[in-house]
Length: 181
Image 1 (cartoon, rainbow, N blue to C red):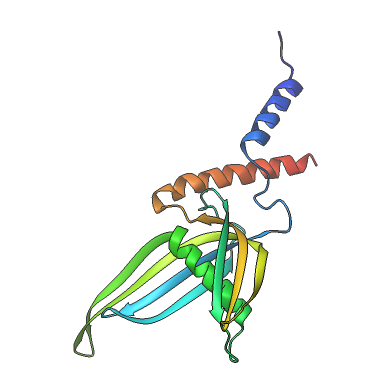
Image 2: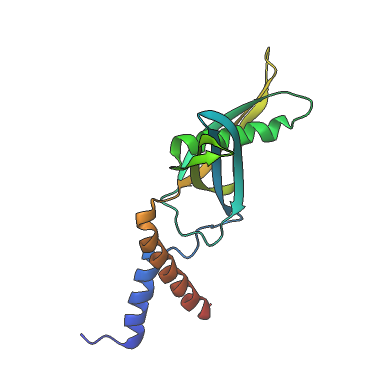
């Protein structure tokens, strides 16, 4: 049996479509890199930061999973209870499922021996989040939120080169397909 060019091309396209999905974000979902840093100095907590930045071209994601997370916050007049509860839920998610790393500095600062450390937790989320339940807890001055989040921890650094090559191949194939649309 002799195969024509169009038959071979159709087999290659079908195989590639099954292997490489054309888009990570099928709908209006946006991909964000989230990171939670906890700073300590000489064993004492000095501060923390939760950052969330767009990550449209991120290639370091492992497999995404749908996770149910909850967070709560105190109801205070000077804070936004809803945002605080969402942030607390994301912090707990990163601590339990994110990539963990630590950096530290030892030395003399102003002639005093000091040890500064920063514990970091990283992951990727798809936004918007699906809010299952939210509301004020009766009898307590707390606000609680329950959400479903598509989450992936950032892969360990030894996988980054493989994931980078895989993303480049996926992008090249997507560009090639877009010519025929």
